[in-house]
Length: 273
Image (cartoon, rainbow, N blue to C red; front, side, top):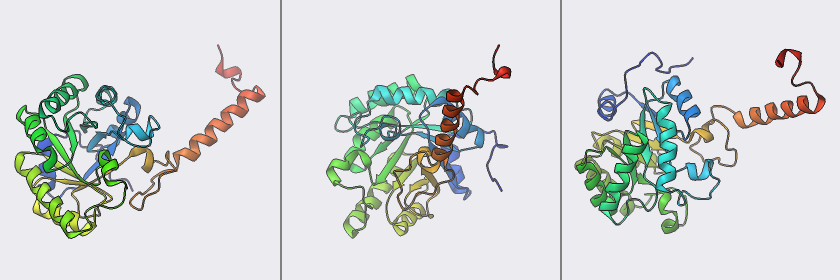
């Protein structure tokens, strides 16, 4: 039986995120990159939509998220924002738009907010990007942090394996999480880390944690919509649950369409003017 929140029309905001955690209400989040999908997710009652730089993989066919540009992220966020009434829209800041230069980070975040109508930005990293996050926050722009597996750093790590398994890395992640809350982030994505560590972070922080491959102890969950709907069959990590097999359904539908066109069955008499 469906437990969606379509009857709850109240707009989801960053402050509501924090109150949801305080009340023990789990937060649902999915990615979207276009108007049609965003509208469907919003109508279903999703709490938040992430305009992820994963568009680089599922929309553009790149091997990593690194090629995504700021202009491309703004375009995708514009499309998503037009389809959303209730959900909180969060836009990823792409690689190269905030690292190493806090002023450039501020300019990038301002462009996203002004041009796309997204309601928050997401930034990967901890202490290394503190100055950039603080500068963005100083402009009144909400920031969602992101720790654990940070795909924009794939060339540094060289692997998409689980992060923070060692004591040293786990302690750094905890310190970074506390720091992100302290400086003013409203939420935190925890990606592909041990479930026990994610639970500890979630219990220590007053801001909500959104997990992806981080266990059930987080305050919410996020998945890439193409993965959970079965549109991307080449990606099957342990943490992914597929809720549909739309790839097979689309393939079948297109096959039937081809057959009907080839045989002259489409369009029939009732489908023409």
